[in-house]
Length: 186
Image (cartoon, rainbow, N blue to C red; front, side):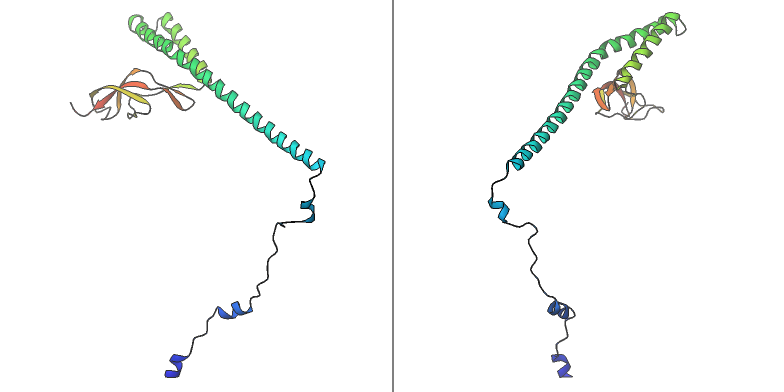
């Protein structure tokens, strides 16, 4: 029994290690060759210059196109932002006309058509009016001017009324909507 305890157990990995031949691997990239000692030919120099010039020109073309698009978008943004105040005034005038003349008056209907046409043009440039009333208040899109009591229709933390319309340009907030928010504290 004691002789069994003193016997060493064979290592299952050892036969593989003993039989494995270690061969040196060749360098994938030779460090020096007879060609390296000679200076590059004129053809190689000109080819290298051509490749670099092509890459530089390609980078210039891409940068110029990107800067052009950024400038164009910035100009659109500036023009559209300048149109928001007159658009607000048109909305207020239309609401006032509807109250005094009624929705069926031909003048009110004409101004409605003008407003719809103007909004269609602005939509083509990516300007969208935010839908706010009844939505949950989000400080990324809304500016709270005050609170009003919450009701059964509009729960606490949701928008009760819109004071000034907000607009989104190509998915980014151009102008936050000014709103009144429902509050449970009465």
